[in-house]
Length: 529
Image 1 (cartoon, one colour):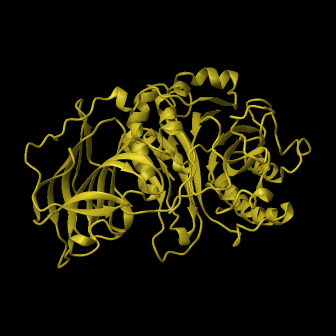
Image 2 (cartoon, rainbow, N blue to C red):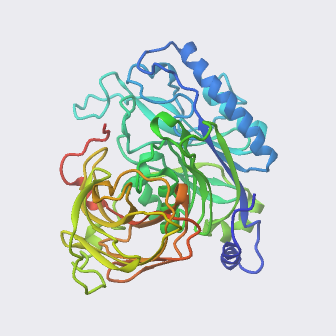
Image 3 (cartoon, rainbow, N blue to C red):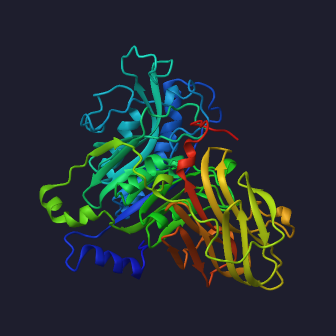
């Protein structure tokens, strides 16, 4: 499947020059996995009993890896928690744990050296899967690491004497373990520890250069995700187990917004698990999106996505010939995540209180909860017009022309929020959101909606304090649309313009993360509803 457009081909040609040294694209795949889950995760199982669940999921992985190989896939990504599931306690996950050696300290091929370590059945099977199908393979599993011997009372070692980590592993096409990444930002994960220091993990490939690794909730935070981007990484791999939430926390919506805003490729594999509304996977480039998002009532099944992807690693392009002649070292690199100022308050002056529009805020505003935050809303009462709404000194401005379809009656509102989100995590936000309300009264604005008939041409604008503003548009049945035009001015004003929609508008938003607010007040690494 060729997923990139004429525009992307042009940009790729400009990137590699008129005489590209190596093929400037590769074939990637992500698998949205319909998890075979232990119905009683809080009950501790023996190693052999736990392996029975893991092997059932690995059987499906084997099938999908073989299908991917038939399509010529060079790198295949499986989702977070795809082998063991979730909702374990620290004790009940013990049967699922394996100790994963650090590939930066030793070279190990579990497939060809199965006797080197005990209790590594999962690593061995994943390694052989990569080797048998001649592809790079990324999977997520549970890792147990012993704490270093120390008498320091301030040590972060848990009382039971070892760490348990939510972990990505990467295998080279010959089965060599080349990367290991421990998730930094946990979410509902009593069974896992936060690593002592955030990890920045990358690995090299012979077909596309360097990739970085993140997991699920990491995508919302500065460390390690923004750190990777600021270091010049333009290709990220993203296993996730993401529960969807209206209007701007749908998995595929966040994935697309992050890829588009940061001008990167994102290979995102999610779990399919309807009880927790988990779905949404894709292969995203700055120019295109090949994605899947299951709707309510769709058969609960896995989905393999395959796409040809342009290489975005500029170093790989420049050094392609040298790598081809001398061979690419398939090894991982790591560094400590640090604050460089990218997207942070200290490097960005506060935005002016008003947006580019000099018009006063629209009258008849009201407060309604959306994503557990108190948004200030104003209704769109006409088929076309201009409205402005402010939440404190942060203001959003909208020009719109609405095209109702047939006799449909739908209510829309523009909402603004600026502050610290404190439910299911703590993080700073500024958001401008145009949403279709669930009903015809104002109290329904901010409630779950998946369908819409009214198309809309619009210009949505806000003044933001950092460069980390993520744009997204969802149409009827949560289909993605790419903004027709996005502009960021020197004073922090971000403008998103869109027209000629293919279907009715569900939501359009500009979502800014204020990373400097994350460290204000008490922060828990895990959170619950």
